[in-house]
Length: 252
Figure 1 (spheres, rainbow, N blue to C red):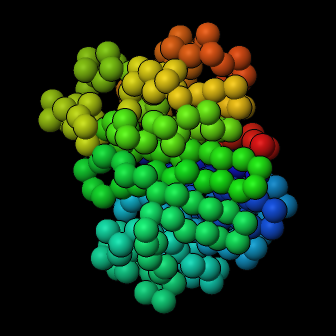
Figure 2: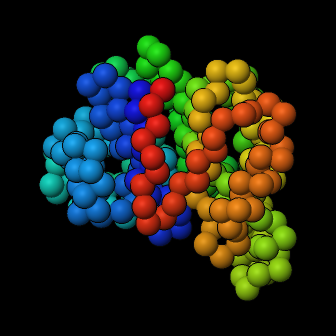
């Protein structure tokens, strides 16, 4: 399995994942021209994509979906809760509803978990015959009923949105601060570190911290606070996903 986060943050999110001959995007919050440019760097043409899966309908996750679908005829996989919003921006014949919280796209199996956000939102456990990873952003907390499913995965792409002190002392209006830290908001560095401490294992090769706030976090804070929680359990590199550049290619 190969994974590269093309963009991550409040201005747009998109991740490329490849397994055998299966190629998908997770979320499309950046426009087609940027997707094409990023994929061309790794010798992939957008026409090779087998599909897109969408976590939720905030613009930083679907803002580029219409421009992509106009250029590439591929299915868009969504949970039914997202249908009414997605059908407003792409033809309904492109939409595939995921039933029973699982979808198989060629060599990739994707199991769906519920996120907790201010719109219906979902995370993904993605596996092939060699590896299993988690993709989860835009959630105020992670339900403990999923912890067993999320133990000892090969890689975690997980939100590390804010530093709690920076957020509460920063310029956001009080109501927005309360939204961010609520159970319907975003994961803090501290929460993410505590979650990973409970779930990572000896198989875990990569941790990618995603969706960092430009106003309420820094790369240094995210790295230090997460690392403080897991340093006794994890000796590999933690990668920061950025807004305006791709991560390195992760190969599992």
